[in-house]
Amino acid sequence: MPLRIQTDVASIEGILVRVLNTKSPPVGRCRLLSSGFSPAHALNITEDISGHKECLGCGNCVDICPVLLREPSRRDMTEQRTSMALESMVGEDCDQCGACVLACPQVDTTIKYYLVNRRMVEVMSRLEQRVGDDEPDLDLLLEEAMGQG
Ligand code: SF4
Ligand code: SF4
Image (cartoon, rainbow, N blue to C red; front, side):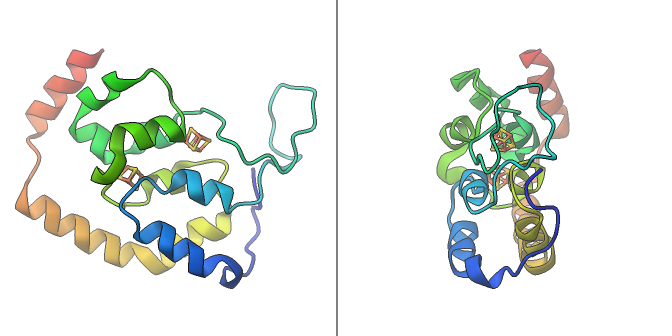
């Protein structure tokens, strides 16, 4: 897991704010702002990949994304489960909820804490407004999700 200890967010705050303010999936860029793979991160491989920042293809960000929950048909665009796939499937329709960043094992704890402590109130109020305007039909969502199986 990348840096589990807190570091000073000030050195990346300017660019981090720009990333989080952009209407596009932020997880890939937050991953690149992180420290990369650490020796304590267990993968069943022999090579040393310390500091490696690339996407692991774990699909956590794809699984957590609310845009894909609301519109599961977007998943038909690709079988890939990477941050690149997430960008293709969601693009500018991103809710900027930050869930993909929190779910990514390659993003530093510093960035996750920043998101939770400094951005969540704003995110929650924006999402609350959107849900209030356009409440999702849960039966329809379930039907679509079952249809995907
Ligand atoms: S999880 Fe949230 S921030 Fe990430 S791509 Fe989906 S809507 Fe955007
Ligand atoms: S959550 Fe997994 S698939 Fe998504 S960007 Fe991070 S490593 Fe890649």
